[in-house]
Image (spheres, rainbow, N blue to C red):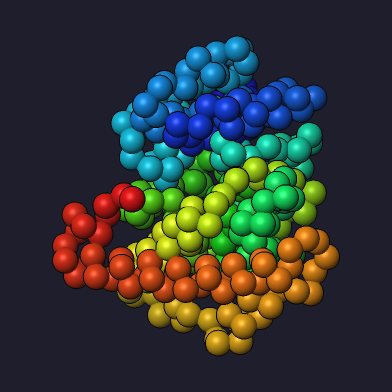
Length: 298
């Protein structure tokens, strides 16, 4: 498979219907110069039967449940493309996504490309609020200027050899939280650049309830605490928290945009930050109690 120019890596756990929709979107792309590596991260029901109807361009690997960072690393290790692209099973890449990423990456080994993510569930206020948070971060750090410290891992691309040389994603991160932030920081620290490709679009269809929304952001807080610990261990002295104005602007962000339920989104972003603080404190307590508790999944 060395002749393939690009490989798309998708970690997946127990979401067969979402994975099927993701693969349908990818296979609908007229570009056939890429293959897809799905890493089934220990789903109770194997995902191989979901992948099989899509033919030889889609490979399904299965492993014990080790989390998305380990699944992505496994996918890259067994991929054949010079360029590796990452998305998630609840995403639907737009037609032309791979080509847009390829053009933005342009064969530069030290260039990490991040694309644009859009919410596909307009009637889901929780999904809309979560997307507003991501949009705010991309605007706040001015992704187009090249100063973005990280890109979300559901829409990124990079040189496979450089990824492997860096050691890939740090598998020590608990849950699916902050490993993409860590990866972006390490990429830049190694002399690489982060380039935003606005025309490389991935739709995100992650339905949530209030409970799952708060749990997700609590997990983000846990990931943030782990990231800060890792930064300390590396001697990274960069500030770990933004100024207070950042958080106020974040909460008010939906009010200045078009769309539905803007007040509700603003309230949810306030709750998201409270949940993150709670998760951060929880992870700090777990770290003090010992490594086994700090890595426990919930």
